[in-house]
Length: 259
Image (cartoon, rainbow, N blue to C red; front, side):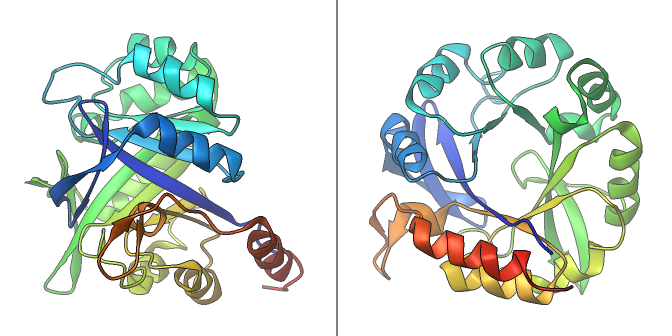
């Protein structure tokens, strides 16, 4: 049985909703408040919002933005971007955010994962990992895909689990924004390494992409950005999410299936 989750993942830069491809070529998409409201109304399983400009501003995700977003939504929220300290985490959690997403901060050490887990529970400590495939091997990249790391992916996953991490968002930089499907080989390679839930991210085109992932791997959660903010080959901006009936049928399919 799989309890599946299909999660919109939104990127913001200076408080504006943006979208790119392979972590570059970011373009303005629209108003973040309108987008989150639509996803909430459509009863998305949860919502991930990452501020890719926070670290360059040398500050964490803005609290005033979180307050405005929380007024618009009634679904679980994960926030990430420029978060370095447990004090910053505390202020964000105190605004009603369920989960904190950490990425580049973890290139230094994993202590903040342990701190978040001890103070708020492992379910609030989410690690985001961005990878590229180079000569048939997956490499971790930090700083919005700009800095290649020598850290072994499988060892890193195990260390995160030991540190108290509650969930992993694993993004294929190669697939991100391309709407050509998830990197199935990536998730097959790592799915047995840890017992933590893994959110697959990068490449979803439509509901069929999610079905392929769920059918071919043990992964039960997946996130997408481009598929939920664009429509058609010309990438017309259209905030969308599968209809409730489609989601319900999909959930029934995997809830009743013996794996």
